[in-house]
Image 1 (cartoon, helix red, strand yellow):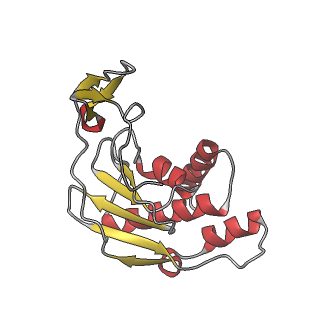
Image 2 (image 1 turned 60 degrees about the vertical axis):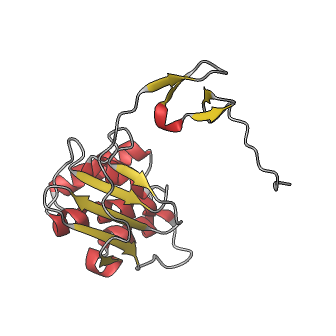
Length: 179
């Protein structure tokens, strides 16, 4: 691993809190996406990642590519798969990376991590077009107080109940067919 990549690996491990195979998967996916899509660190929403899992690898993607929930360029479409779709808004290029190479069963944590770090990304992932179109940029919504708890809530999350705005926590769901 070259020194720049090693530096990112150490930052990812520090951010995540430990070294593991899952972190290595996300790390490899991020660097493969950099190569395939000509990416650099995303200062804003230039790069978008849709992760199909909420596992360890997502932390490496945050560190390496600058995708984050707060910026609105890290989104989750939870399918339980080790798959990540990356989009470059500047060029319009995009790729979905699905993990195909799996560490052998029963491999201890350190060896599984090494397996993923040593695996060439072309052998590690299936690269294909994303299944999900590039999402629009993040919006900023007006804040609305809930008529019940009075807590300020983003307008797009407010529901109407008896003609009054209520937050998701205070909304009482009505379904005559629920058990």
